[in-house]
Amino acid sequence: MLLQSCSILFRRFSRPESPVSTISHSEKAYEHIRRRLFSGELTPGTRLVNRTLASEIGMSLIPVREAISRLVSEGLVDHVTGAGAFVRRVDRQELSQLYDVRELFEPHAAAQAARLRTDHELDELGAILVDWESHGKKIISRKRGATAADLDRWLDFNERFHEVLITASRNRFLVKITNDVHVLSQCFAAHRGSPALLSNPLVTTTLQTHRALLDSIKHGDANAAEAITRKQLKFGRASVLAFFDKQKKS
Image (cartoon, rainbow, N blue to C red; front, side):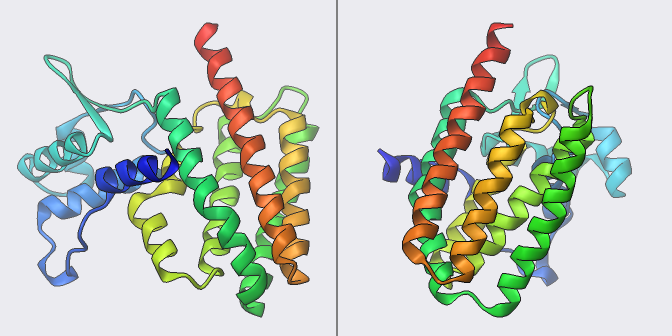
């Protein structure tokens, strides 16, 4: 089931690389819109206005239309007849499948990172976590709860930490699959716009487990790194899906 989910996502989101010298206006528009999708700037449900995007990118309408059509074909954007194109909302099943893929690859990546990481990668993971922990303390201190900006920054730290972790595994195929399928970007983009997700228990537990993971990588304990990552992802899946279900009922 996990391999089937991975295969579906890989076929759906993977694409060939285009040489820089031959990138067309349509490709530039596609990259620009896709980058804004994955960064969370264009949140689920946002209408994509061709004229606005064309002006923003600095090109005519035709390449933008072609880019949006491509994003529709990839399932990242929905086209509603008579209404236009909208950033697609990831449903519960797809979100669960993204965690399937992460649970398949990331525990192995963490174990390999514990064995093969460089000092530079260890320092980078440490620096990310220090800033992430500082941000977490600010979130916990807010009496009114996290803001949308808090959540965006939180997800940026989370995504960057796991990107470095996967790179540190020294497995170029794993890195390529993760990048081509955009597993992390897709997973974290689905959370944006829901700051209530950042409850104090979630913030505390997430930071504690990532600190434990970093310590296991630092000491070269591959078994601990794998186990902690697996536990992290199960906690993340349960928390996010429970929040998803609660929001749907309300």
